[in-house]
Amino acid sequence: MDVGARTDVGRVRENNEDAFRIAAPQKLYVVSDGMGGEAHGEVASELAVDTIVEHGVESLAHPAQPLSGPPNSTLSDRTNRLASAVRLANAKIHAAGADHPEQFGMGATVVAAWVDADHLSVAHVGDSRVYLLRGGEFRQITGDHSLVAEQVRYGLLTPEQAENSHYSNVLTRALGPHADVEVDAAEYPLQPGDTLLLCTDGLTRMLPDAVICKMLSGAKSAQEAADELVEAANKKGGNDNITVVVVRALPGPVGDPAEEPRKKDPLHDTA
Ligand code: CA
Image (cartoon, rainbow, N blue to C red; front, top):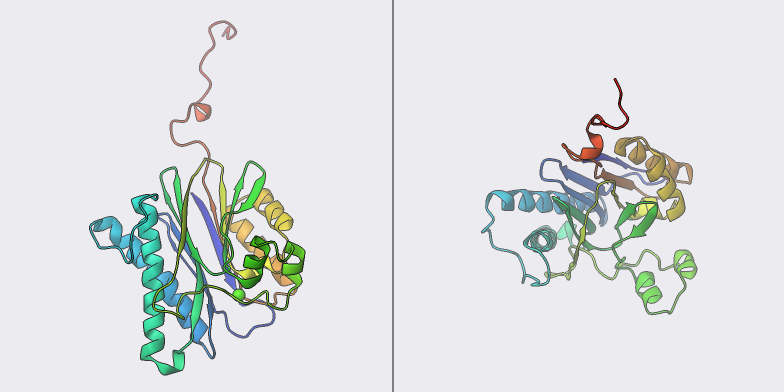
């Protein structure tokens, strides 16, 4: 895995309420966008990323650890564990709001991606996104939990109308507001050469998908891609905090025949 990440306050906001965590050896990647008055959005997003990484990493050492919420029998143990971690993060943020009245109402989005050999598990709540770039095809694999995205899904708005709507920042789901949350979880086969992008809306509101795809494809490394994306979003105005995590599944595992020195061909090699 080649991994790069960057978070930036942007050009307008005073606080950075975004957060990310990378557990490199466990191949677990999490991005969160916090909301709430004062510095409470920061508290919420930090709680989200910390809880998910802690629960995920601990579960590898203690696989019998109970899940938070009911497992989905159509998904792998790994994906169920990731959804469980997101539900725990929701419970923690909700409880923090109840224990500290000044933090009441704080919330966060979250996207989490976990790689297990050639499988990718994804779980999310809110309008932060995961994209997959594979062989030139660039696709958002999470569905935004926002009012306008729901309206697009029901055919009530076009994607263009959604982008220009005054309600584009209204979320239909977030971590924190309620004791329970519905988590979207899914899994995909991961192929060598695939690139994943986890990001907050501070990136996707500033840059169209086609521009993001071009930068991801053209960068020499995941870190270079992360830096270029943040700089480009800032050049477009940087209206919000910007956070990106870029993960590239490197092609050619050790021993891949394509990587080995060419064997002598008895028919053509004369020396
Ligand atoms: Ca944001």
